[in-house]
Image 1 (tube, rainbow, N blue to C red):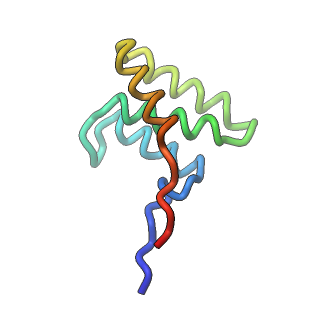
Image 2: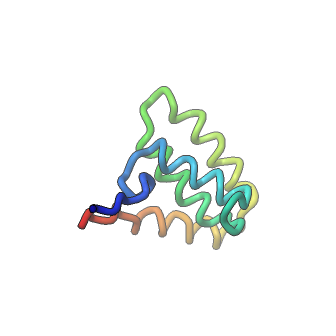
Length: 87
């Protein structure tokens, strides 16, 4: 039986939005604004046009809680991120 990959690593923008919120609020995962911002950046970039503004507002709200260094790390993580290939 094949193991299913988490949807967030498959590249769907809606699936990337949820981990961003979870990391921001520390729900089920340790609170991590850098990881939250990474997922929200990915989600916003891949969102359909009608959803981009709303996601950008949430991402920007998280960004206000961050230092410049944290923002830079989140952007770098988002740039380096790639979906895990299915095995």
